[in-house]
Amino acid sequence: MYFNSIDFAIFLPIVFSIYWFFKSQYKIQNLIIVIASYVFYGWWDWRFLLLIIFSSLVDYLVGLFLIKEENRVKRKLLLWISIIVNLGLLIFFKYYNFFLESFISAFAFFGNEINPTSLNIILPVGISFYTFQTLSYTIDIYKSKIEPTKDFIVFSAFVSFFPQLVAGPIERATNLLPQFYKRRIFNYNKAVDGLRQILWGLFKKIVIADNCAEYADWIFSNSTSASGSTLVFGVIFFTFQIYGDFSGYSDIAIGTSRLFGFNLMRNFAFPYFSRDIAEFWRRWHISLSTWFRDYMYIPMGGGKGGVVSRVRNTFIIFIVSGFWHGANWTFIAWGLLNAIYFLPLLLLNKNRRNMEVVALNKLFPTFNEVLKILFTFGLTVLAWVFFRAENITQAIEIIFTIFSKSLFSVPHFFNSGNVFTLISLIIIFLIIEWLGRNSEFAIANLGLKWNKVFRWLFYYSIIFVIFYFSGEKQEFIYFQF
Image (cartoon, rainbow, N blue to C red; front, side, top):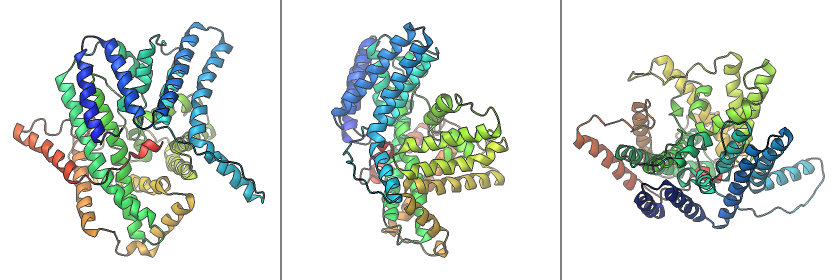
């Protein structure tokens, strides 16, 4: 079930109405969430439900055994049961054929031909997200940071909470789990704020991401015959596609959660206004970046120790992050390239230089800030080539073509008239994002002090643009991860 579908437009009000009918009974509300989440998830393929129920049951039981067990060896064994089961399922469904094909290619390189059988494996939607969410639960219990829940309905609701189930944010048990034990009271202002965030998320997805996707897909599909200038536009369109798509999903997820009285963590903080790559990664896919920081980077030693260990830890995190995104060498190359970007900042101890919002309490940035933003944006766009390309060869060919003399030729598009409209929409989008960069999301506070007529005109204008520019429905990019 997609957020931008008629199915969800019918599903959400029904669940909302039933949920708040039992407003004074949070245990029944939790059960409603579990049922609704399983319906939502099973909409793609009911067989996926068996996997998420099995994963939930394993971590629920491991948590209960961990809190009772004092023997250090047995505690580690329980932790490893959770890690092996969760990562084992993830590796099998997501990476089996990748490792098999890489194994075949390695043998072929040395002149040996082998023909093992690959499997036609269907990747369960959201497996990378809920796997990391349940893993953080058992790890936190093992480290005595939290107490395990004895209520399986609560734990199932935590794992399968439908707004963030298939593409995050990747929630921590310390934040989300306690909210299922509290009596939720409907808050009108919180619900309205949630609707605003949903509205802005739909704008990002339908107007920006889906329209950019049409041009990005066409240009990348014809990359061998495209000029350097055309490819630049293709990569830029993909840059806004992936941001509008993924941050749009996060906005809808967080906004939907607020309708039910829950607070999810922020997942994006206007990353394309970053002044260096370190700031970009503090603002992009925050729930994943902080997960890797807390459960991998810091346990490995983090930024402590000598230069070699710091560089090693940084490269491991970025490469693993790339591999988390998909079973393709392009994602590993994307992670490696970002590690190389990050390295100078790390070595010069400047990776925590830009912690505040750019041009805080100012309308315009300084000229120096503009240059830094453009430079960081350029590095990010270049890295996205590897993320979007079908393989390493295509990515390298695209980059070589971009930096050829054809960069100065006139770009070619399959529909030149609409591309100017799309560019105008992107510019308007960036202006609104810039004006709202001090808030949780762009229109959280934008217009609240306006005259009521102008404020509602602004919201209805967004709704009109969403319907007017809605084209062919595109799947959310991160559903494949």
